[in-house]
Figure (cartoon, one colour):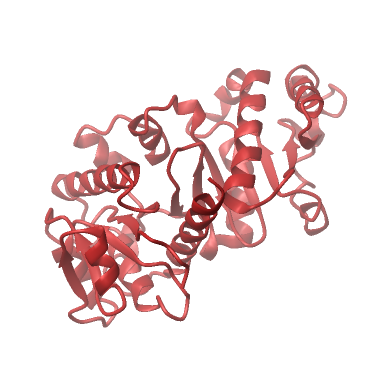
Length: 337
């Protein structure tokens, strides 16, 4: 068991999705997976019903503090906060979205106050959250603002056993990507990634590979000039600053097994350029990590999966990986500051 003085805070996610049941299933495997202690913020009734879909009976325990959560974790799944909703698997509601948003905000607040060692967020439905006033493209942007940061300073990294990948642009149309790319964006994000790999993963002098935007990384301007006008100058400045960084690389070869041995993280130009290889390689163990925050935050790299919610078949692998990674990152931060 990872040695943490405070447990992880887990947000419930949308009650109609697979979040509640994979949280319960992860708790059931806490010992074999050597998970750090955690508690869930709200949704005791939802979790109780969802745990039954996994054959887990009477495992929920309402607690009044993080310290109490530590005391009961070995025997029961601790739930802090009495907020709740109806359990309607596969049928998202505004009531459920409101609970998901409350759970996310409260888990983050507890981590910022030093009452939890990290935040692990279960999947949410953005369309449902929008109906209850959520105005952010995703949880990453929400967490940045909640922590008092510019949204550009919160960086999404997808991490699995085979690959770490960071998309420079995330929630935008593919046609908008070239307009959003800039030397400043690449430089700022690369520095955040290098710092986070050292602080959260214990990787000194992290090696970063930068993808090109166009086929064959532009092939000397034949297929576009973003590589020569934007990406290469940014890499040159980062090299001058002492970062171990290479590129721009052709994205059709940088994710091959041999290429992955040469870097610790890949900086991709857009959402799918990063997520397609990560999900192809590590779908059941992929973790969404937010870099640049004053707190540790991870999440399973998949959605709510409403179509299989409540059927007891959702794989908890990515949630287990997110819990494990959050615990490991929190220990490194506590040890090294």
